[in-house]
Amino acid sequence: MSVLVYSESENGKLKKSSFETASYGKALAEKLGSKLICVSFNCSDSELLNKYGADRIIHVESSSLKEFTAKTYSHALSQVIENEDVSVVILSSSADAKYLGAYLAGITDSSYLSNVVELPESLNPFIVRRSCFTNKAFSSTEINGGLKIISISSNSYGIKENNGDGIIENLDLNEVSTTLKVSNVEKQSGKVTIADADIVVSAGRGLKGPENWHMIEELADVLGAATACSKPVSDMGWRPHSEHVGQTGKPVASNLYIAIGISGAIQHLAGINSSKVKVVINSDPEAPFFKAADYGVVGDAFDVIPELINKLKAR
Amino acid sequence: MNILVCISNVPDTTSKINFTDSDSKFDKNGVQFIINPNDEFGLTKAVWMKDSNNASVTVLTVGDSSAETILRKCLAIGADKAIRIDCEAKDAYSVAKEIVSHCESVKYDLIICGRESIDYNGALVPGLLAGYLNYNFITNCVSLEVESEKAKCAREISGGTEYSECDLPLVIGAQKGLVEESDLIIPNMRGIMMARQKPLDVNKAQNINSRAIDKKFFKPEEKSEVKLVKSDELDKLIDLLENEAKVI
Ligand SMILES: Cc1cc2nc3c(=O)[nH]c(=O)nc-3n(C[C@H](O)[C@H](O)[C@H](O)COP(=O)(O)OP(=O)(O)OC[C@H]3O[C@@H](n4cnc5c(N)ncnc54)[C@H](O)[C@@H]3O)c2cc1C
Ligand SMILES: Nc1ncnc2c1ncn2[C@@H]1O[C@H](COP(=O)(O)O)[C@@H](O)[C@H]1O
Image 1 (cartoon, rainbow over the protein chains, first blue to last red):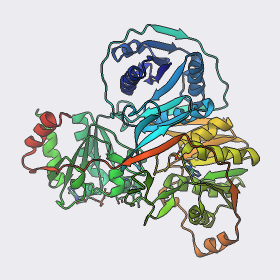
Image 2 (image 1 turned 90 degrees about the vertical axis):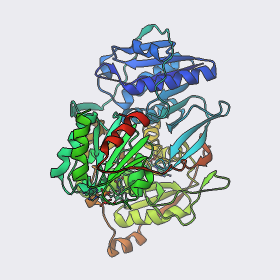
Image 3 (image 1 turned 90 degrees about the horizontal axis):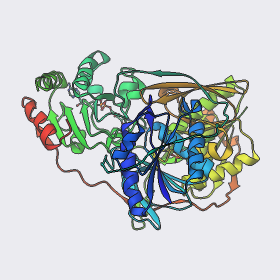
Image 4 (image 1 turned 45 degrees about the vertical axis):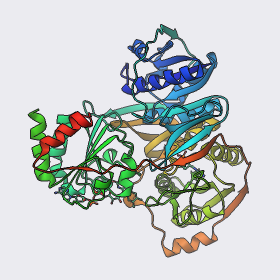
């Protein structure tokens, strides 16, 4: 039996999340006394997975996998799963991986669990801890059924180096027919996205208006961070919807979350609970966000942020 | 055109999350339940399609009788018909299998789910439905136009938007953007009265065994007290982030 990791790539290069899923996969394979197989599609640097303990690396090159769709990718993975004796499939928690995971579970009739945050606490029965209620709680969940698919919450396990000796094995797969065709992708280039960012700089209604976001963007630039916002800010059209974080928006699982002029409503906190370190900058010392923060500055954002940018630049 | 909207009954976003039965069950005591916000965006879109696509809209939930309150609300918002599959919603797999079994007897051109439920956050049911039914599937769906059996969709992706086209039947996972917050329909008196006349069928469940069983729930550890830094001592903040938290 093997543990199979789907190693996500973008523009032919492994995504950082692939190192975390491989690290997790290796630790799980060791617990199970089995091998770690990593599978990547149209990816030119998959040998890097050896650094995280890959025992085998399967590489598939196919023009039909050029555009990501849940169906084509799931059918490709299910063929690999059929060829190999796989007990657990590991995915990341990216939007694409979750899109794929549920569909893959359907076509392979397996059990799928998302938002897993730790290695299994028991193998038989198979029990893992996952976050639920938008990170307001965790659950130890038993998964039954033959093949198990799990998505690992980003940054929950971390990247751990390990020696692997996987040789790249090229594999040809059958194409699956689909009427779903991707016609166009619009993507901002050169901008860090919330999902991939180690640091997220987020601002709320305390910023008063969209014209003041230049300082948020500048702070994000200095830190190599992604920008985000609270719900009212995107509702009022100050910022795009894609930046709205919270229970009804995007989840953030970054290492550092800086919240500026955000009060810290329960629905906002729900989305950022799994961020590791939280810094709050707010003029109101009573703002509820301070209760959820690691570090706080009570002060006017219009004084603090320019000052902070200057100090960071001077570092 | 026949549309099915799958509705999940979830605790209101302000609910305090507590557990009972030695932390093995969610404590519903004093909790108000609402239509899962992602599903409400989907339902609104479906109601619009009654006009634009001459669609008929069925809402369905897998759950016990307490879920009927939100089904009535869906009817008041504009759905034509409601179905409750009578069993406790135990896990995404059993829920999806119940819906699949219903969809084998009634054919839908379009199945609208939410991208994820805000309680268990599985993001599972729509993908499972599409996988088992072999329908096309788009999640994180932020735009949808259907014309003569063909759908044009947009999906939010990391850092952008992806546009695609496919044939029906199709399953989507809806989210904000498919319609806007300000588009959500607040039922008026007439809608509420009309909803009373609309059918709400209770169907027998297949009683499928679940595959994911929550054994025990935990609350996150209490946070330690925030460390406050004076606004004129920002060097100290940078130092803490660099050397104590090691995040910059
Ligand atoms: C069903 C539902 C779902 C929701 N989902 C979400 C969600 O997913 N995400 C989300 O964010 N919200 C969500 N909300 C809204 C949430 O309840 C709050 O209303 C929202 O988060 C408040 O946004 P805010 O903190 O930017 O604004 P406010 O609450 O207005 O807070 C502004 C803050 O800025 C501070 N401030 C003002 N001036 C300055 C200054 N010069 N310098 C520094 N600080 C200053 C103030 O002290 C205040 O704390 C939801 C609400 C509902 C009902
Ligand atoms: N008990 C249920 N009955 C009907 N539909 C459901 C149920 N649970 C989940 N769904 C649908 O599946 C979507 C995703 O839910 P989940 O997989 O639980 O995150 C929801 O937004 C609903 O559209």
